[in-house]
Amino acid sequence: MKILNRAFGALILHELTAHRIEHYKRERLTGRWRGHGATSAPKPIKPATVNRELDTLKSMLAKAVEWQKLLDSPARGVKRLKVDNRRTRILTEEEQVRLIEGCPGKLRPVVTLALTTGARAGELLKVRWDDIEDGMITLLETKNGRARRIPVSPAIRAVLEAKPRIYPWVFTNKRAKTPKPYTVNGVAHVFNRAVQRAGITTGDVTLHTLRHTALSRMIAEGHDDYTVMEISGHSSTRMLGRYTHPTEARKVSALDLPAVVNIRPTYDEAAEGDPSTASEVAELLRKIGGRQEARTPDLRVANAALSQLS
Image (cartoon, rainbow, N blue to C red; front, side):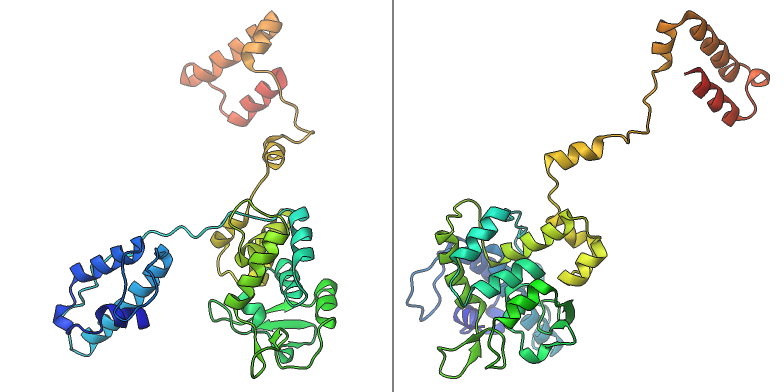
């Protein structure tokens, strides 16, 4: 709202055109836009951020049309930017160990739970002690707005039992004037330093990488999609596709036939090896593919005969 007010707050509604909105979108994306009263240097903005600003503006203008302040929304024809937010980076077991060892005390339990549960960092940071009862953790503030429950496994219980129950939240910022839960932005800065200490220099490793790693591990271990969906909070199996990373060994294994299957030679190979067999095959094929009265009436009989000959 602050950004949009700096860009369009001084305009009358009829002055807000699609061209102005397109210009604003392009300037934000390239990092040349500076709003009125801004003191910091402009910087390029990610397409997803521009889309969120555009969605907010579209919602406001749609409400103006609904209230009959506008005949039509000038942003109706403005298209959103294409965004590819799919992160394919997952941490190896060795990187996970180094990362946990490189985390300071306040961050280590957050990272451990994220790698164990696959929950988002923002969901874990909002958990209260009251949300943990009857062997379940209830995540109330989720991305899709639907609460979900995660069983407390022995590994999760070990992390929780090491935390003192002094404040309402499991992860509380004690340095604040009044105790409050840690924010994602505050934890992200500490996490980035832990990634550097762990010597992880390849790929774009963020807090969301922890969720990606956990869910990829669950799928690789053979857990069914619906079990993973109950844990992750996804509403469809299609969304789990980004967490599936088959290795070359698994691909080769998938292409192998079971040991009980006997790959038989083709008819041409059989004909080359045994002349009598070749004549039998030719005679059978002539009967099957010849005139109507010469064809085998039951194809199952023909298939069985071909199987015996081969």
